[in-house]
Length: 246
View 1 (cartoon, rainbow, N blue to C red):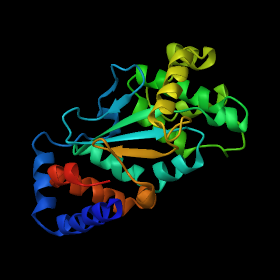
View 2 (spheres, rainbow, N blue to C red):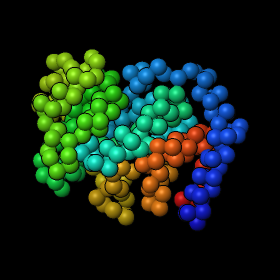
View 3 (tube, helix red, strand yellow):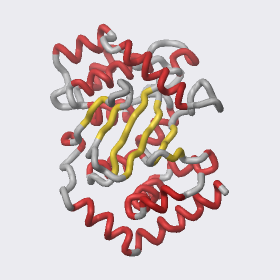
């Protein structure tokens, strides 16, 4: 049942690219007009104190990602997989992105790089630069086995984001100002695993409009065209997605 549901969604997605569904999605996106770049994207911390939301709050498609900044598979998603397509959809207002940031790899691999990176991302959110800094971190991710997200490296990467560096941001990075956020965010990640896995759902995990991409279709995350197709399909036919068995 699960495989049949997803196969149907993929088939509809192919039709949407060539049929009226794709044109409808483009028309809806033009109502407000796209953002010029990720610099314009609104960002906020959710009421739960851990979810970071990027993009138009009224976007019909919501992609909730569970990531650890040190995870090389997350880096693959963000740089060559579905991540660039998601950013484009977010800029076009057809989707918004949500993030739950984990830091479990520090305990598994040793070191403190994940925690430092999550703290720095929270500090970037305070400056309205989360989306840009998030992209820079993954584009320059150190090897997983190397505890490379040091204070000095995180600040050096922040130089690539216009307007991010400053006394408050620098101090937040150096003092782990948001260590409570780091801890609560990791706990939120663990809760998301449910009874199946008390350690968390794994990274990256993508939940689209409340439905988690099944393990059988995990490869979609790393195929930019396929992931973009799924986003376009859901935007064009959200009711069909809501009825899709997973």
